[in-house]
Length: 209
Ligand code: PRP
Ligand code: URA
Image (cartoon, rainbow, N blue to C red; front, side):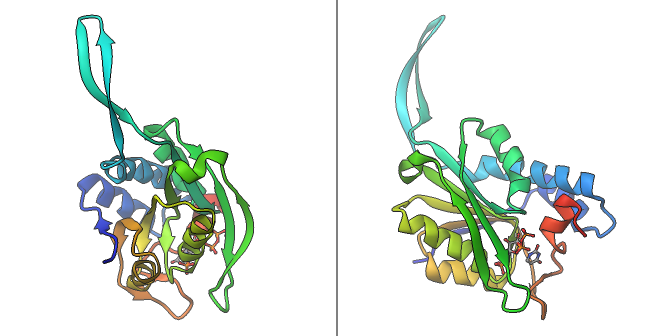
């Protein structure tokens, strides 16, 4: 059985996504809005995190309440994944951050790893792989494989715009991983870009075009 695919249907997320899809939106607004969408998505992505029952002494009595059972580690895929980190951290300020540096070869569309560094406690944590774009799915697929090689089991993927091709690849190769997207688009073009998508997300976040 495949993991769940959650495509957000929320007016604020749709509104902000429309802003970053617009080719006339500049770097500052693009970067800020990517981060804001990350924050809004984090609330739902973390809805079923494991918790421990605890008792807390309040000034007026004992509250039977809950606390997070495990650490959360964010693993942004560089560069574009960095754009969502600050927003997600606004909701989970105790999260640790690992990094995977990867670029997609423009001809073959294959991912190439150039950097990987993870917190020591990552194996026992809930890991959120963060990359705004799920196109062929190669980058996310490779990253999840890298994490599984290290014995990490509790992995979720969080992105902004996905293509059906990328979703199918992750569902096939990692049926244990849930997928969270702000939108599921139509198809990939001949250059492996998502249509209608939002263009090159890394370039638009960092102003490198
Ligand atoms: C983009 C994007 C994803 C990847 C998605 O990165 O940020 O990581 O492509 O494509 P895929 O699903 O086909 O693997 P890119 O290689 O452009 O690097 P960048 O983030 O440094 O710009
Ligand atoms: N990477 C991007 O930044 N955009 C796409 O549409 C596909 C891959």
